[in-house]
Image 1 (cartoon, rainbow, N blue to C red):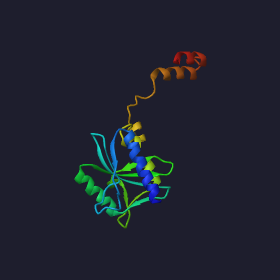
Image 2: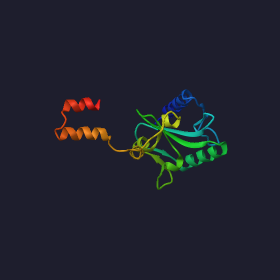
Image 3: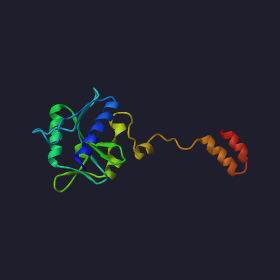
Image 4: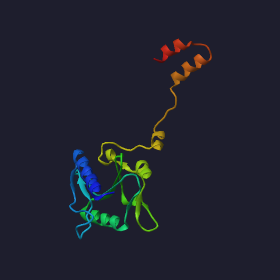
Length: 173
């Protein structure tokens, strides 16, 4: 991906975080022109403070060097922020990961595949506190007292021929 596209994606992230109520700034010359390694974006909302390394791709996996991730963690710890990797694939939203949740390659680099981002990443709405992820397991664990007894009685009555379908429909309304 071109540097211009990467810069555009970083500005897009800054604008979206700003619209979500975060105080946010894009680090000048992040990743290259300074001797210190700086995260791409700093964001906070008085409750949460983040140092974000932002990466985007047209669809290929996103790779980060071990040094990039170590520098992000070091900066975040010293700054008092939570380190996050923000990834965006074309035609998808931003997804966020704690560095410890990323796949580490044999060479010590970090990788995020599009499928992983969509399945396991924290989406933008959840990241900014506008929603909360609920898994299917959690939905299944919700209190379920089983079927309604009145409905079962009506269905049994229809099945046994004691009650007609129209009468059952009226009873269930």
